[in-house]
Every structure is written in C-alpha cells, then in structure tokens.
Length: 243
Image 1: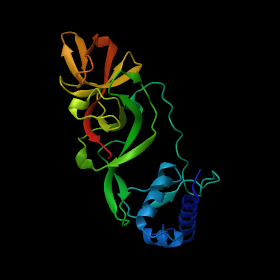
Image 2 (image 1 turned 135 degrees about the vertical axis):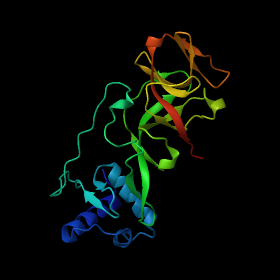
Image 3 (image 1 turned 180 degrees about the horizontal axis):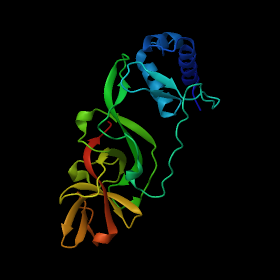
Image 4 (image 1 turned 90 degrees about the horizontal axis):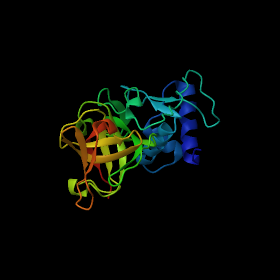
C-alpha cells in the first residue's frame, strides 16, 4: 500500500516517461509534489524501489523505470519483477544475482540527485548473540553501504539480538555485515548454523575434531559440538550501529 505522496510521485514519473521518454529530475519531482527539499524525494524514490514499483537503471544518471502501478498493472515496455524465493532453511547462499556483491555496484542517488556508487546488502533477519534462536531466512529489507566498507565477495546483514558478544564490541540491536563463506580460521567471528536449525554469532575455535563456539561475555559458557553439527554460514566483516 502506497502513501499519498508515494502514489503521486509514481504517477508523475510514469506520466513524464510516457510523454517524453525521459524521467524527471529530482528538482522537477520536488516542485511537482510541492516538497521543500530533495531529501524528501530521495526517501520517496527509495520507498518505491523497495516496494518494487520502480527500478533505477545501472550506469545511467537519473535513469528510472516504472515496473508497475498501484493497481498492479505493468506499464508497456516494463518487464515483470521476478517472484520472490521462499527458502526453507537459513541459507544465505540462495541469494542470486549481484545483490550483496561488491562488484558490480548498483547506482544510488544522493540528496542532490547525483549518482553515487553503493552496494545493496540484503538484511536476512535476526541472529542470536546469546542463547541460539531459531534460524531465520527472509529478506526484510536492504541497506546501502559504500564499497570501501566491504571486502570482495557476497554479503548479507543480520540484526543482532543478545549480549554474549559485547566484549568483542557487538551490542544488542547492532547490524552485522557477513561475508558469505563456508570456512573460517580460528578466532574468526562467524555465523554458525547448529544442527541445520539454529543460528548464532560466536567466535570459532577448533579443539581437535570438535568445534567450540565461544562467546565474548564471561556470563556465557563456550559450547562445544562435533564437526558434523556445525556449518559456517559466513564471517563477520563489518558492523553498523545506530544511536
């Protein structure tokens, strides 16, 4: 369901494309909707993109494509968006395409309507930094990060719940950025999937043939598992905190 302003902006973009073949500028959008700043337009464009109504085309400034209208119809010349995938288990490797990859980068517009490079990272749910919770597998939204915050590879984000990693600087409600990989070194902080059912964020330690998942909080105990019970789903590479 779109807000009144989102619907007005979508109609304005669609009508301009129908009339001229060229999308309106951020200044033209601001004047058409009688907003005070382009930052408001930027937020509306992001909301329409997240809801699947428009798409920003790569490598072209100001390039927008209307994918559908509020009544569900698809404008002439636009391709229908693909149906969402409904995975059964926590498995970030099912994410396909370029989402979450450092290269290629997707275009992003700043508040002045200028194109800037940014990487879209899917937020895949919550991860326990405490007693493991049931693994979640759904993309709730995406966040944008500059590529210099990320190493090469495919990434996803998780919202932290719990305090077992506070001595490693990871607090409840932080968002952790994870590089997808199925191996890790001793001492790495990883997303570990236990018995294919529960996920947790812990420091990895190998003890002979066993795997230890070590907290960074003295109030919690290290848990030790056989190697066939734990699968590595990724390694912590960055962290976002809102104040």
